[in-house]
Length: 302
Image 1 (cartoon, rainbow, N blue to C red):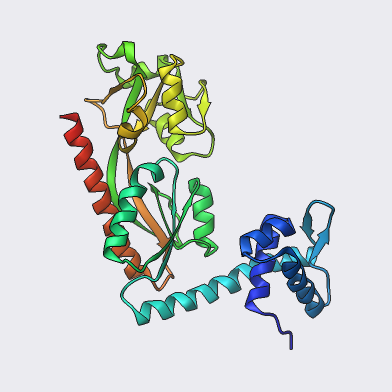
Image 2: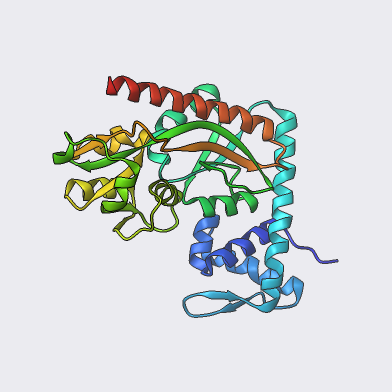
């Protein structure tokens, strides 16, 4: 009988992900020698090397490659057992690993964290900010519990809960402030600044403008707004970002009147997760936090 520990499987998964003993050890919050010992013991138990050791990185052997998905599945099942126990023992979440995309995180998180703390003071909250594709992978692999992002994601394994719709606004140079709000077709003639590849908001903006992208890219909404202030073009940003991103920028904000420009924000989690009921309650808190922010924004525009 082969005796492998859950700890060894987690260390194996982390080393396979990072390809580096030092980074994997840091992610596991242990020393590099301790990680090396556990991996070596795992290899001795299985009777075969799982990694090829190089001077700067490690690579999976053929046997190691064949184990990766199975180890993911085993650890996912272990996490599900823990979730099942927590779901049956309490109506409140003890821990929440929440993912959120970059075009939402800076604007919603402060209010959301405050609401979550008020509703559940003992909640151990871990936040992961990254792009949609990575969040979906991490949910499916059990590395995070749920994510706040733009819908739809169309993943059969995930529950999608729509929370609110959010308008896009046009940010243009300050000297354009008195000009009429351009029509959708007019945007095709302008130099449009967008987020770099991988951001779902980029794709949504391109879809709204109905055009290929031939302008400049930025790594964040902050960068895009500053580029507009420098006279490099125009950009679209979500409504929740307006107050934060334009407060100190010399730009004009224009809202479309005769055309729908918006995205749907929602929360997703695995359908098999036993904590689905608690996640539904978190989704309601997210919706409440967003409503407060929208009320503040509307009063600011009056």
